[in-house]
Image 1 (cartoon, rainbow, N blue to C red):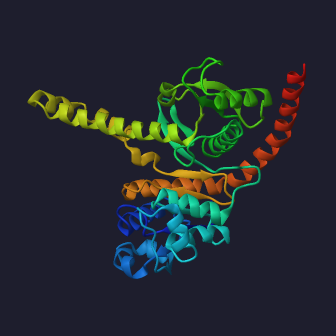
Image 2 (image 1 turned 180 degrees about the horizontal axis):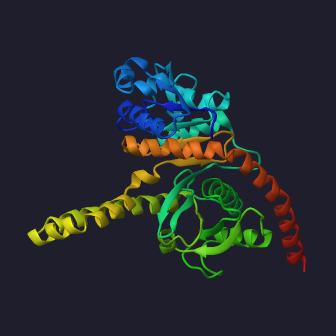
Image 3 (image 1 turned 120 degrees about the vertical axis):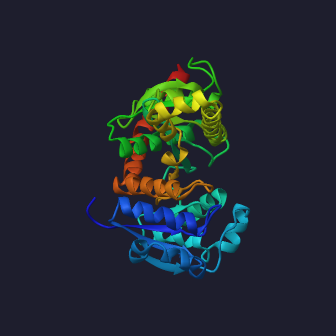
Length: 355
């Protein structure tokens, strides 16, 4: 992309605040020099940190905000006290007003979702936005959604998630018809909750042009990369995500302990160091940091609150790729297409019931 792309950052969000958000922005700018930044937060608090990154300072405009949303604030509290005044709100509003192509925050997830939904509104036909994350697999990466925005979802919402996730996969992976699977307790059609089985029937009957419905997938299919997009509701999706992150850290710790246990083990590590470096990179959660709020009239990326500068840069780069691919318009077009096909599917279902 040759033109500039402006990013709005909630600088004060996350466990480590400006040190990580500004450090990550500086890393992202090195990789994508056409980026420009709107920095929202207490300018006095991060002035010294910004001075450490002269290139970022030259590419940025500081928008001072007196109010910051705490990581412990409830969404209702954040809306009541931070609407219009906080750095989180104003960074989202910059997307709404067209001043920024996308927003990135490592702040309070519930507050960010509440503010984003209130400020940007949902796309027509979308009942609930979904958080979509990238999942490392044996074949590369998959899109997984929802990973925490919604506890529970009915069949129509799961179908919307499938359509939005497929649009994201097409944008990121240059696929014509990404394969989509519904996460379930078995691959058989008779297994699982009624909402999941009904969503599967709708997707199978609709035969949408923008995705290839694979069927049900199980938990072990996530790591295998069986499909390009895995669809579930936020409760199980968030548990799966946190379990995978914990397992990656557990394996990494086991390896560190094993490689330092004896002299021969240390010699073996030295001889196979390149292989272990490759493994360490594959297990690094920072490489796929960032979850996108899909279904809104604007692009918001949620970074993990505890990440470092490298992870925050990955979240910015994800937002960049999504904005550059016009993901919002792709989702709107796909949902319009599904609206027509979905209506026909519903009519077919009614005729079957009458017979």
